[in-house]
Image (cartoon, rainbow, N blue to C red; front, side, top):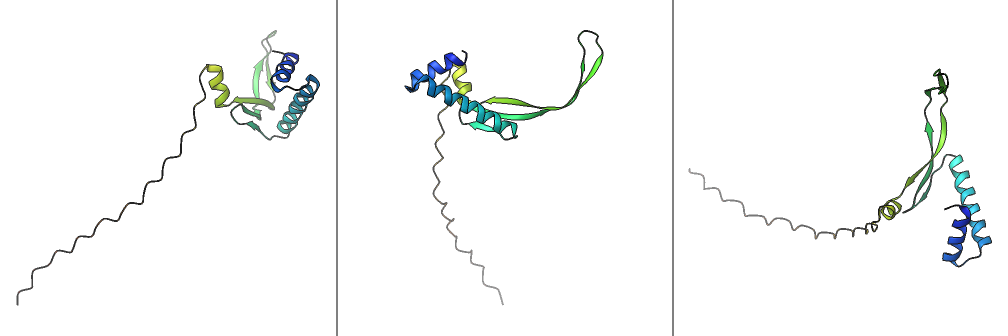
Length: 123
């Protein structure tokens, strides 16, 4: 799916004009790009997280000559899919949220047994 097809699909589903959806998608990509460029992540719960990660410096190889070359460290964008997206792609229903366990009633203190009587001391 390309951008035009995405705009058409969203416009139909959201019952909005194609121009409005185009503006919204452009604004969304601009905001995500600028936030990630500053080093902050953008998390869309259930969909995924966009973030910037540092790729370390490494030694590569020129494919033509086979000579080693140094590749500098740099920041690259990364997307990590969320649980909802992973489940949808796998064809599964997203896992339902687990209900919080019910609080257990405070345990009653153990009944104290009367202390055993000591035999009277012999005189």
